[in-house]
Length: 516
View 1: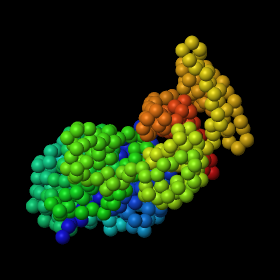
View 2: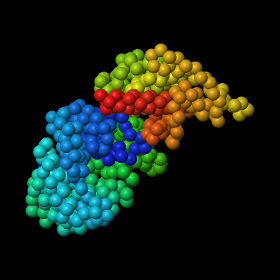
View 3: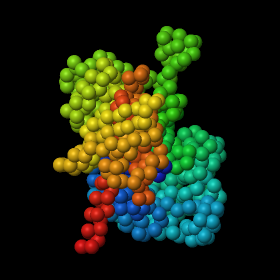
View 4: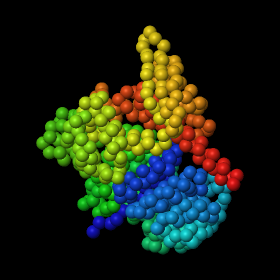
Protein backbone atom coordinates (compact mmCIF):
# COMPACT_ATOMS: atom_id res chain seq x y z
CA UNK A 1 0.00 0.00 0.00
CA UNK A 2 1.46 3.37 -1.02
CA UNK A 3 1.67 6.09 1.60
CA UNK A 4 0.43 9.58 0.78
CA UNK A 5 2.86 12.49 0.71
CA UNK A 6 1.15 15.89 0.96
CA UNK A 7 2.38 18.50 -1.52
CA UNK A 8 2.38 21.97 0.00
CA UNK A 9 3.08 24.59 -2.66
CA UNK A 10 4.49 27.97 -1.66
CA UNK A 11 5.12 29.45 -5.12
CA UNK A 12 2.83 32.40 -4.34
CA UNK A 13 4.42 33.12 -0.97
CA UNK A 14 8.08 32.06 -0.73
CA UNK A 15 8.45 31.96 -4.51
CA UNK A 16 7.03 35.43 -5.04
CA UNK A 17 9.44 36.91 -2.48
CA UNK A 18 12.29 36.34 -4.95
CA UNK A 19 10.72 38.24 -7.87
CA UNK A 20 12.01 41.55 -9.16
CA UNK A 21 8.45 42.92 -9.33
CA UNK A 22 5.36 41.93 -7.34
CA UNK A 23 2.56 40.06 -9.09
CA UNK A 24 -0.91 41.50 -9.53
CA UNK A 25 -3.95 39.85 -7.98
CA UNK A 26 -5.03 38.55 -11.42
CA UNK A 27 -1.58 37.09 -12.09
CA UNK A 28 -1.54 35.34 -8.70
CA UNK A 29 -5.05 33.99 -9.25
CA UNK A 30 -4.05 32.61 -12.65
CA UNK A 31 -1.14 30.74 -11.05
CA UNK A 32 -3.40 29.52 -8.23
CA UNK A 33 -5.85 28.03 -10.72
CA UNK A 34 -2.96 26.27 -12.48
CA UNK A 35 -1.69 24.87 -9.16
CA UNK A 36 -5.21 23.66 -8.37
CA UNK A 37 -5.35 21.79 -11.70
CA UNK A 38 -1.89 20.41 -11.00
CA UNK A 39 -3.28 18.78 -7.87
CA UNK A 40 -1.42 20.46 -5.00
CA UNK A 41 -2.98 19.61 -1.64
CA UNK A 42 -2.17 22.90 0.10
CA UNK A 43 -1.20 26.21 -1.48
CA UNK A 44 0.37 28.93 0.63
CA UNK A 45 -0.65 32.09 -1.19
CA UNK A 46 0.73 35.00 0.80
CA UNK A 47 1.61 36.84 4.00
CA UNK A 48 -1.52 38.99 4.56
CA UNK A 49 -0.06 41.28 7.24
CA UNK A 50 2.77 42.35 4.90
CA UNK A 51 0.70 44.65 2.65
CA UNK A 52 -2.87 45.47 1.57
CA UNK A 53 -2.06 43.98 -1.84
CA UNK A 54 -1.02 40.67 -0.31
CA UNK A 55 -4.16 40.65 1.86
CA UNK A 56 -6.33 41.17 -1.24
CA UNK A 57 -4.52 38.40 -3.13
CA UNK A 58 -4.95 35.91 -0.29
CA UNK A 59 -8.62 36.80 0.12
CA UNK A 60 -9.33 36.55 -3.62
CA UNK A 61 -7.60 33.20 -3.99
CA UNK A 62 -9.25 31.83 -0.83
CA UNK A 63 -12.63 32.76 -2.30
CA UNK A 64 -11.98 31.16 -5.72
CA UNK A 65 -9.99 27.98 -5.04
CA UNK A 66 -12.12 24.96 -4.17
CA UNK A 67 -10.06 21.79 -4.71
CA UNK A 68 -6.88 22.72 -2.83
CA UNK A 69 -6.70 24.06 0.71
CA UNK A 70 -5.53 27.67 0.88
CA UNK A 71 -3.00 28.70 3.51
CA UNK A 72 -1.56 32.04 4.67
CA UNK A 73 1.58 32.78 6.64
CA UNK A 74 1.79 34.71 9.92
CA UNK A 75 4.44 35.43 12.49
CA UNK A 76 3.78 34.20 16.01
CA UNK A 77 1.90 37.41 16.79
CA UNK A 78 -1.84 37.88 17.43
CA UNK A 79 -2.17 40.75 14.91
CA UNK A 80 -0.60 38.61 12.15
CA UNK A 81 -2.91 35.70 12.95
CA UNK A 82 -5.97 37.98 13.05
CA UNK A 83 -5.11 39.38 9.61
CA UNK A 84 -4.49 35.92 8.14
CA UNK A 85 -7.80 34.64 9.51
CA UNK A 86 -9.66 37.68 8.17
CA UNK A 87 -8.22 37.13 4.66
CA UNK A 88 -8.90 33.40 4.70
CA UNK A 89 -12.37 33.28 6.26
CA UNK A 90 -14.08 33.45 2.83
CA UNK A 91 -12.81 29.90 2.16
CA UNK A 92 -14.77 26.80 3.09
CA UNK A 93 -11.68 25.47 4.90
CA UNK A 94 -8.26 26.99 5.35
CA UNK A 95 -4.91 26.66 7.10
CA UNK A 96 -3.05 29.24 9.19
CA UNK A 97 0.73 28.80 9.11
CA UNK A 98 2.54 30.50 11.97
CA UNK A 99 6.27 30.44 12.64
CA UNK A 100 9.10 31.60 14.87
CA UNK A 101 12.86 31.13 14.79
CA UNK A 102 14.34 28.38 16.94
CA UNK A 103 18.08 28.28 16.15
CA UNK A 104 20.44 29.84 18.68
CA UNK A 105 21.76 32.42 16.22
CA UNK A 106 18.22 33.52 15.28
CA UNK A 107 16.89 33.52 18.84
CA UNK A 108 19.79 35.51 20.26
CA UNK A 109 20.80 37.75 17.33
CA UNK A 110 17.52 38.35 15.49
CA UNK A 111 14.84 38.02 18.18
CA UNK A 112 17.11 38.98 21.11
CA UNK A 113 15.20 36.66 23.41
CA UNK A 114 15.79 33.45 25.33
CA UNK A 115 14.67 30.09 23.94
CA UNK A 116 12.09 29.82 26.74
CA UNK A 117 10.59 33.16 25.63
CA UNK A 118 10.38 31.89 22.05
CA UNK A 119 8.84 28.61 23.20
CA UNK A 120 6.13 30.51 25.06
CA UNK A 121 5.41 32.72 22.03
CA UNK A 122 5.09 29.66 19.80
CA UNK A 123 2.66 27.90 22.14
CA UNK A 124 0.53 31.03 22.53
CA UNK A 125 0.47 31.60 18.76
CA UNK A 126 -0.69 28.05 18.02
CA UNK A 127 -3.39 28.24 20.69
CA UNK A 128 -4.56 31.60 19.37
CA UNK A 129 -4.67 30.38 15.74
CA UNK A 130 -6.81 27.41 16.85
CA UNK A 131 -9.59 29.92 17.63
CA UNK A 132 -10.02 30.35 13.87
CA UNK A 133 -9.34 26.88 12.44
CA UNK A 134 -8.37 23.39 13.53
CA UNK A 135 -5.82 23.30 10.65
CA UNK A 136 -2.82 25.08 12.15
CA UNK A 137 0.73 24.59 10.94
CA UNK A 138 3.71 25.64 13.02
CA UNK A 139 7.23 26.14 11.64
CA UNK A 140 10.50 26.08 13.57
CA UNK A 141 12.41 28.58 11.44
CA UNK A 142 16.06 27.57 10.88
CA UNK A 143 15.36 24.13 12.34
CA UNK A 144 18.37 22.75 10.47
CA UNK A 145 20.69 24.73 12.79
CA UNK A 146 18.61 24.37 15.97
CA UNK A 147 20.09 22.32 18.86
CA UNK A 148 18.23 19.01 18.75
CA UNK A 149 17.13 19.18 22.41
CA UNK A 150 15.51 22.56 21.82
CA UNK A 151 13.93 21.37 18.57
CA UNK A 152 12.38 18.35 20.31
CA UNK A 153 10.97 20.57 23.08
CA UNK A 154 9.51 23.02 20.57
CA UNK A 155 7.88 20.32 18.45
CA UNK A 156 6.37 18.57 21.47
CA UNK A 157 4.91 21.77 22.91
CA UNK A 158 3.56 23.03 19.56
CA UNK A 159 1.73 19.76 19.01
CA UNK A 160 0.41 19.86 22.58
CA UNK A 161 -0.86 23.41 21.90
CA UNK A 162 -2.88 22.18 18.93
CA UNK A 163 -0.70 22.30 15.79
CA UNK A 164 -1.79 19.59 13.37
CA UNK A 165 1.24 20.05 11.11
CA UNK A 166 4.80 20.73 12.26
CA UNK A 167 7.23 22.08 9.69
CA UNK A 168 10.96 21.47 9.99
CA UNK A 169 12.62 23.96 7.62
CA UNK A 170 16.20 23.95 6.43
CA UNK A 171 15.76 27.71 6.08
CA UNK A 172 19.27 28.54 4.88
CA UNK A 173 19.92 25.32 2.93
CA UNK A 174 22.70 24.31 5.32
CA UNK A 175 22.17 20.60 5.95
CA UNK A 176 22.99 17.59 3.79
CA UNK A 177 20.68 14.56 3.29
CA UNK A 178 21.91 12.13 5.93
CA UNK A 179 22.14 14.98 8.46
CA UNK A 180 18.67 16.31 7.71
CA UNK A 181 17.17 12.81 7.59
CA UNK A 182 18.78 12.20 10.99
CA UNK A 183 17.02 15.26 12.43
CA UNK A 184 13.64 13.94 11.28
CA UNK A 185 14.40 10.46 12.60
CA UNK A 186 15.46 11.86 15.98
CA UNK A 187 12.19 13.79 16.28
CA UNK A 188 10.22 10.60 15.67
CA UNK A 189 12.34 8.76 18.24
CA UNK A 190 12.22 11.39 20.98
CA UNK A 191 9.00 13.43 20.72
CA UNK A 192 6.29 11.42 22.54
CA UNK A 193 3.24 13.01 20.83
CA UNK A 194 4.69 13.22 17.31
CA UNK A 195 2.06 10.79 16.00
CA UNK A 196 -0.56 13.52 16.58
CA UNK A 197 0.78 15.77 13.79
CA UNK A 198 1.98 15.57 10.21
CA UNK A 199 5.69 16.32 9.94
CA UNK A 200 6.53 18.65 7.08
CA UNK A 201 9.82 19.83 5.57
CA UNK A 202 10.70 23.07 3.78
CA UNK A 203 14.18 22.90 2.27
CA UNK A 204 16.14 25.64 0.52
CA UNK A 205 18.68 25.06 -2.24
CA UNK A 206 21.67 27.15 -1.16
CA UNK A 207 23.95 24.10 -1.41
CA UNK A 208 21.87 22.38 -4.11
CA UNK A 209 20.43 19.74 -1.75
CA UNK A 210 16.81 20.83 -1.21
CA UNK A 211 15.25 17.98 -3.22
CA UNK A 212 17.58 15.33 -1.80
CA UNK A 213 16.96 16.59 1.74
CA UNK A 214 13.18 16.53 1.21
CA UNK A 215 13.15 12.99 -0.17
CA UNK A 216 15.41 11.77 2.65
CA UNK A 217 13.07 13.41 5.16
CA UNK A 218 10.14 11.47 3.69
CA UNK A 219 12.11 8.25 4.02
CA UNK A 220 12.53 9.10 7.71
CA UNK A 221 8.88 9.82 8.44
CA UNK A 222 7.96 13.26 7.05
CA UNK A 223 4.69 13.23 5.09
CA UNK A 224 4.49 16.77 3.73
CA UNK A 225 6.94 18.46 1.35
CA UNK A 226 6.88 22.24 0.96
CA UNK A 227 8.06 23.28 -2.49
CA UNK A 228 7.64 25.70 -5.39
CA UNK A 229 7.10 25.39 -9.13
CA UNK A 230 10.46 25.53 -10.93
CA UNK A 231 12.11 25.76 -7.51
CA UNK A 232 11.77 29.55 -7.38
CA UNK A 233 12.25 31.29 -4.06
CA UNK A 234 14.57 33.21 -1.76
CA UNK A 235 18.28 33.23 -2.72
CA UNK A 236 19.03 29.95 -4.56
CA UNK A 237 15.39 28.93 -4.37
CA UNK A 238 13.26 26.20 -2.82
CA UNK A 239 12.76 22.51 -3.25
CA UNK A 240 11.38 22.02 -6.78
CA UNK A 241 7.80 20.73 -6.89
CA UNK A 242 8.13 19.03 -10.28
CA UNK A 243 11.29 17.20 -9.20
CA UNK A 244 9.99 15.74 -5.93
CA UNK A 245 6.64 14.90 -7.56
CA UNK A 246 8.29 13.00 -10.42
CA UNK A 247 10.78 11.28 -8.13
CA UNK A 248 7.92 9.92 -6.01
CA UNK A 249 5.90 9.07 -9.15
CA UNK A 250 8.71 7.44 -11.13
CA UNK A 251 10.14 5.45 -8.19
CA UNK A 252 6.82 4.60 -6.54
CA UNK A 253 7.32 0.85 -6.87
CA UNK A 254 10.62 1.10 -5.02
CA UNK A 255 9.84 3.85 -2.50
CA UNK A 256 6.16 3.20 -1.82
CA UNK A 257 4.92 6.82 -1.75
CA UNK A 258 2.36 8.67 -3.86
CA UNK A 259 1.07 12.22 -4.30
CA UNK A 260 -2.06 13.81 -5.77
CA UNK A 261 -0.03 15.65 -8.42
CA UNK A 262 -1.26 15.16 -12.01
CA UNK A 263 2.03 14.91 -13.97
CA UNK A 264 0.37 15.90 -17.26
CA UNK A 265 -0.10 19.42 -15.84
CA UNK A 266 3.57 19.91 -14.91
CA UNK A 267 4.96 21.39 -18.14
CA UNK A 268 2.08 23.81 -18.61
CA UNK A 269 2.17 25.01 -15.00
CA UNK A 270 5.94 25.41 -15.20
CA UNK A 271 5.69 27.57 -18.32
CA UNK A 272 2.89 29.69 -16.85
CA UNK A 273 4.87 30.39 -13.66
CA UNK A 274 8.01 31.17 -15.66
CA UNK A 275 6.10 33.53 -17.95
CA UNK A 276 4.16 35.44 -15.31
CA UNK A 277 7.02 35.61 -12.81
CA UNK A 278 9.66 36.62 -15.39
CA UNK A 279 11.86 33.76 -14.17
CA UNK A 280 13.39 31.87 -17.15
CA UNK A 281 13.87 28.12 -16.78
CA UNK A 282 17.46 26.97 -17.26
CA UNK A 283 17.82 24.66 -20.25
CA UNK A 284 19.27 21.78 -18.23
CA UNK A 285 16.61 22.01 -15.49
CA UNK A 286 15.34 18.56 -14.54
CA UNK A 287 11.84 17.64 -15.81
CA UNK A 288 10.91 21.02 -17.35
CA UNK A 289 14.11 22.37 -18.94
CA UNK A 290 14.35 22.73 -22.73
CA UNK A 291 17.05 20.04 -22.82
CA UNK A 292 15.39 17.66 -20.35
CA UNK A 293 14.38 15.30 -23.19
CA UNK A 294 17.07 16.21 -25.74
CA UNK A 295 19.73 13.72 -26.87
CA UNK A 296 22.89 14.89 -28.63
CA UNK A 297 25.20 11.91 -28.23
CA UNK A 298 25.04 9.54 -31.20
CA UNK A 299 25.02 6.56 -28.85
CA UNK A 300 22.12 8.04 -26.88
CA UNK A 301 20.18 8.91 -30.03
CA UNK A 302 20.63 5.38 -31.38
CA UNK A 303 19.46 3.91 -28.07
CA UNK A 304 16.35 6.08 -27.86
CA UNK A 305 15.38 5.23 -31.44
CA UNK A 306 15.60 1.52 -30.63
CA UNK A 307 13.86 1.77 -27.24
CA UNK A 308 12.86 5.05 -25.65
CA UNK A 309 13.55 3.92 -22.10
CA UNK A 310 17.23 3.20 -22.83
CA UNK A 311 17.99 6.83 -22.00
CA UNK A 312 14.61 8.29 -20.93
CA UNK A 313 13.30 7.23 -17.52
CA UNK A 314 10.19 9.37 -18.07
CA UNK A 315 8.60 10.44 -21.35
CA UNK A 316 7.96 14.04 -22.41
CA UNK A 317 4.26 13.20 -22.78
CA UNK A 318 4.05 12.06 -19.14
CA UNK A 319 4.68 15.62 -17.92
CA UNK A 320 2.55 17.28 -20.60
CA UNK A 321 5.20 18.06 -23.24
CA UNK A 322 3.50 17.24 -26.53
CA UNK A 323 4.65 17.35 -30.15
CA UNK A 324 2.88 19.20 -32.93
CA UNK A 325 0.48 17.06 -35.02
CA UNK A 326 -1.36 19.60 -37.22
CA UNK A 327 -0.03 22.15 -39.67
CA UNK A 328 -1.52 25.42 -38.47
CA UNK A 329 -1.58 28.10 -41.16
CA UNK A 330 -3.69 31.17 -42.00
CA UNK A 331 -6.13 28.76 -43.70
CA UNK A 332 -6.86 27.00 -40.38
CA UNK A 333 -10.24 27.78 -38.85
CA UNK A 334 -11.28 28.48 -35.28
CA UNK A 335 -12.34 24.87 -34.72
CA UNK A 336 -8.82 23.68 -35.59
CA UNK A 337 -7.29 26.09 -33.08
CA UNK A 338 -9.82 25.03 -30.45
CA UNK A 339 -9.10 21.35 -31.16
CA UNK A 340 -5.34 21.91 -30.89
CA UNK A 341 -5.71 23.75 -27.60
CA UNK A 342 -7.79 20.86 -26.27
CA UNK A 343 -5.06 18.42 -27.33
CA UNK A 344 -2.55 20.56 -25.47
CA UNK A 345 -4.73 20.16 -22.37
CA UNK A 346 -6.43 23.55 -22.18
CA UNK A 347 -10.11 23.94 -21.41
CA UNK A 348 -12.28 26.37 -23.37
CA UNK A 349 -12.52 28.54 -20.26
CA UNK A 350 -8.73 28.88 -20.05
CA UNK A 351 -8.54 31.31 -22.96
CA UNK A 352 -10.54 33.64 -25.21
CA UNK A 353 -10.89 31.82 -28.54
CA UNK A 354 -11.71 34.96 -30.54
CA UNK A 355 -8.72 36.87 -29.17
CA UNK A 356 -6.44 33.88 -29.67
CA UNK A 357 -7.69 33.31 -33.24
CA UNK A 358 -7.17 36.97 -34.15
CA UNK A 359 -3.59 36.84 -32.83
CA UNK A 360 -3.04 33.49 -34.55
CA UNK A 361 -4.11 34.84 -37.96
CA UNK A 362 -1.82 37.88 -37.62
CA UNK A 363 1.11 35.62 -36.73
CA UNK A 364 0.30 33.06 -39.45
CA UNK A 365 0.33 35.82 -42.07
CA UNK A 366 3.80 36.85 -40.88
CA UNK A 367 5.51 33.48 -40.52
CA UNK A 368 3.39 31.00 -42.51
CA UNK A 369 3.17 28.05 -40.12
CA UNK A 370 2.30 28.37 -36.44
CA UNK A 371 3.42 25.80 -33.87
CA UNK A 372 2.21 24.69 -30.44
CA UNK A 373 4.69 26.88 -28.61
CA UNK A 374 3.44 29.86 -30.66
CA UNK A 375 -0.17 29.18 -29.66
CA UNK A 376 0.73 28.92 -25.98
CA UNK A 377 2.85 32.08 -26.12
CA UNK A 378 0.00 33.99 -27.82
CA UNK A 379 -2.50 32.72 -25.24
CA UNK A 380 -0.34 33.78 -22.28
CA UNK A 381 0.42 37.17 -23.81
CA UNK A 382 -3.24 37.89 -24.67
CA UNK A 383 -4.19 37.22 -21.05
CA UNK A 384 -1.50 39.59 -19.79
CA UNK A 385 -2.01 42.29 -22.45
CA UNK A 386 -5.77 42.49 -21.94
CA UNK A 387 -5.64 43.06 -18.18
CA UNK A 388 -5.20 46.85 -18.22
CA UNK A 389 -5.56 48.79 -21.45
CA UNK A 390 -5.59 52.51 -20.66
CA UNK A 391 -2.73 52.83 -23.15
CA UNK A 392 -3.16 50.98 -26.47
CA UNK A 393 -0.44 50.84 -29.09
CA UNK A 394 -1.91 51.61 -32.54
CA UNK A 395 1.19 51.70 -34.78
CA UNK A 396 4.97 52.18 -34.87
CA UNK A 397 7.06 53.44 -37.75
CA UNK A 398 10.85 53.30 -37.34
CA UNK A 399 13.71 54.50 -39.53
CA UNK A 400 17.15 53.23 -38.61
CA UNK A 401 20.46 52.34 -40.22
CA UNK A 402 24.23 52.67 -39.97
CA UNK A 403 24.31 56.16 -41.49
CA UNK A 404 21.08 57.71 -40.16
CA UNK A 405 19.84 58.79 -36.74
CA UNK A 406 17.23 56.32 -35.49
CA UNK A 407 13.77 57.91 -35.59
CA UNK A 408 10.47 56.48 -34.37
CA UNK A 409 6.88 57.62 -34.82
CA UNK A 410 4.30 56.11 -32.49
CA UNK A 411 0.51 56.34 -32.65
CA UNK A 412 -1.27 55.52 -29.38
CA UNK A 413 -4.81 55.40 -28.08
CA UNK A 414 -5.23 56.72 -24.53
CA UNK A 415 -8.45 55.89 -22.73
CA UNK A 416 -11.59 55.87 -24.84
CA UNK A 417 -11.23 58.98 -26.99
CA UNK A 418 -7.69 60.38 -27.04
CA UNK A 419 -5.38 59.55 -29.97
CA UNK A 420 -1.78 60.79 -29.72
CA UNK A 421 1.03 60.85 -32.32
CA UNK A 422 4.63 61.41 -31.18
CA UNK A 423 8.04 61.26 -32.88
CA UNK A 424 11.49 61.04 -31.33
CA UNK A 425 15.10 60.16 -32.07
CA UNK A 426 17.23 57.86 -30.00
CA UNK A 427 20.30 55.70 -29.67
CA UNK A 428 18.84 52.99 -31.90
CA UNK A 429 15.27 52.12 -32.93
CA UNK A 430 14.18 50.73 -29.55
CA UNK A 431 15.48 53.75 -27.63
CA UNK A 432 13.73 56.08 -30.10
CA UNK A 433 10.47 54.14 -29.64
CA UNK A 434 10.81 54.28 -25.86
CA UNK A 435 11.43 58.04 -25.99
CA UNK A 436 8.11 58.39 -27.86
CA UNK A 437 6.19 56.26 -25.38
CA UNK A 438 7.51 58.10 -22.34
CA UNK A 439 6.73 61.47 -23.92
CA UNK A 440 3.19 60.35 -24.66
CA UNK A 441 2.60 59.01 -21.13
CA UNK A 442 4.53 61.74 -19.31
CA UNK A 443 5.91 59.02 -17.02
CA UNK A 444 9.51 59.14 -15.82
CA UNK A 445 10.24 55.41 -16.01
CA UNK A 446 13.63 54.00 -15.02
CA UNK A 447 14.48 50.79 -16.90
CA UNK A 448 16.40 48.37 -14.67
CA UNK A 449 16.23 45.20 -16.78
CA UNK A 450 15.64 44.41 -20.47
CA UNK A 451 15.71 40.83 -21.80
CA UNK A 452 14.90 39.26 -25.17
CA UNK A 453 14.10 35.56 -25.48
CA UNK A 454 12.95 33.42 -28.38
CA UNK A 455 9.61 31.68 -27.85
CA UNK A 456 10.14 29.18 -30.63
CA UNK A 457 12.60 27.97 -33.23
CA UNK A 458 14.12 29.52 -36.33
CA UNK A 459 14.54 33.04 -37.65
CA UNK A 460 10.78 33.69 -37.71
CA UNK A 461 10.20 32.75 -34.06
CA UNK A 462 8.23 35.00 -31.77
CA UNK A 463 10.49 37.23 -29.71
CA UNK A 464 9.49 37.97 -26.12
CA UNK A 465 10.78 41.08 -24.38
CA UNK A 466 10.68 41.22 -20.59
CA UNK A 467 11.48 44.48 -18.85
CA UNK A 468 11.56 45.47 -15.20
CA UNK A 469 11.07 49.21 -14.68
CA UNK A 470 10.88 51.41 -11.60
CA UNK A 471 8.46 54.28 -11.04
CA UNK A 472 8.01 56.19 -7.78
CA UNK A 473 9.85 53.51 -5.80
CA UNK A 474 7.79 50.62 -7.18
CA UNK A 475 8.95 47.98 -9.64
CA UNK A 476 6.81 46.80 -12.54
CA UNK A 477 7.24 43.87 -14.93
CA UNK A 478 6.24 44.24 -18.60
CA UNK A 479 5.99 41.62 -21.36
CA UNK A 480 5.87 42.11 -25.13
CA UNK A 481 5.51 39.45 -27.81
CA UNK A 482 5.93 39.77 -31.58
CA UNK A 483 7.98 38.51 -34.51
CA UNK A 484 9.23 42.12 -34.71
CA UNK A 485 11.53 42.82 -31.78
CA UNK A 486 10.89 46.60 -31.90
CA UNK A 487 7.14 46.00 -31.66
CA UNK A 488 7.73 43.46 -28.88
CA UNK A 489 9.85 46.00 -26.99
CA UNK A 490 7.17 48.67 -27.36
CA UNK A 491 4.46 46.32 -26.10
CA UNK A 492 6.55 45.52 -23.02
CA UNK A 493 6.85 49.19 -22.08
CA UNK A 494 3.15 49.80 -22.79
CA UNK A 495 2.41 46.89 -20.45
CA UNK A 496 4.45 48.65 -17.73
CA UNK A 497 2.68 51.95 -18.44
CA UNK A 498 -0.70 50.26 -17.94
CA UNK A 499 0.51 48.71 -14.67
CA UNK A 500 1.59 52.16 -13.46
CA UNK A 501 -1.75 53.68 -14.48
CA UNK A 502 -3.60 50.99 -12.50
CA UNK A 503 -1.33 51.47 -9.47
CA UNK A 504 -1.98 55.23 -9.51
CA UNK A 505 -5.74 54.63 -9.76
CA UNK A 506 -5.56 52.28 -6.74
CA UNK A 507 -3.66 54.91 -4.73
CA UNK A 508 -6.30 57.56 -5.55
CA UNK A 509 -9.05 55.15 -4.51
CA UNK A 510 -7.29 54.42 -1.20
CA UNK A 511 -6.80 58.14 -0.57
CA UNK A 512 -10.47 58.87 -1.18
CA UNK A 513 -11.56 56.06 1.12
CA UNK A 514 -9.23 57.35 3.84
CA UNK A 515 -10.63 60.85 3.54
CA UNK A 516 -14.19 59.53 3.77
